[in-house]
Amino acid sequence: MLSGIQPTADSFHIGNLLGAVQYWPRLQDTHDAFYCVVDLHAITVPTEPKDLHHRTLVSFAQLIASGIDPERSAVFVQSHVHEHAELMWVLSCLTGFGEAGRMTQFKDKAQKAGAESTNVGLFTYPVLMAADIILYGANAVPVGEDQRQHLELSRDLVQRFNARFGETLVLPEPYIMRGTAKINDLQDPTSKMSKSSPTGVVNLLDPLKTIEKRIKSAVTDSETEIRFDPVGKPGVSNLLTIIHGFTGRPMDEIVASFEGRMYGDLKKEAAAAVLAYAEPFQARVHELLADRAELERLMAMGAAKAQAVASATLDAVYEAVGFVRRSGR
Ligand code: TRP
Image 1 (cartoon, rainbow, N blue to C red):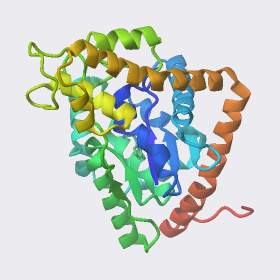
Image 2: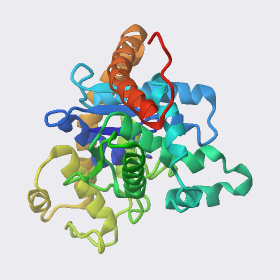
Image 3: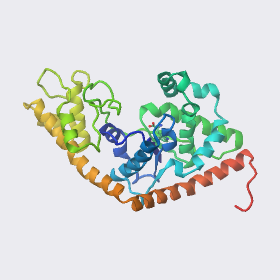
């Protein structure tokens, strides 16, 4: 199992957590798990070096604070394992120009950036993602719906490689996580929560007071009834989903507990549920960031575990395509 997250923000938000990251620690029980902070992907969008640096460390610390055990799994930074970039080159030579151009995420991002500032890295982004997956022989890849097309490309590349060079690579499958919650923007509850909406997002590392204030200013509606109805009552349903996501209580039970109560109570409970998670989470993240030697030890341990697997795959790929092995290795 492998999954990756881009270090493109100073904090995970509750949509990242409830929609994906929250489920990653559980997969350690059933899978041989790899979790990657994909810093190579992050530079497809121009980023200040000091921001990238900070966000990479914070992302790594947050993965561990979320419950991933760095002893049991491999938690690592993508650029620490040079095989990612190397496998990507081989895969690039198997990817059609038109095939890469049809990726909808590329088309969206390119359109937003404009032809002049669209870089080639954005174009080959999905090929790098394929390399991430293929290096570890991952057959389970937990991703959201927006990554399905990229995963399809990874599958096509594996099949193409194996057909052309002999059975070498493992065919990945999307691992659709059951019960993942889609969290919406607090100010515009009909669109997905995103870091680009400053007042609609709840960052796990924001000051606790800010988290509370954001949730208490969430948009609801002009009625008073509390029921779960994402189409008719998107704001109220979003708050219910937040409570459900953080407490794990069944939705019916949560809704029943609000019978005859007001929106103010709903917001108060949603804020309390988030704070109960955020408080120890923040403490763990800050503890890790304050002990730089320990953080570096954990990153090095993850990179070593990852590289042991990645280098074996890359060797097999190099041999299959006909590269002459360098002697003495
Ligand atoms: N493209 C993914 C995203 O934006 C991040 C990612 C990079 C990834 N490499 C991956 C996800 C490999 C899963 C597997 O969310």
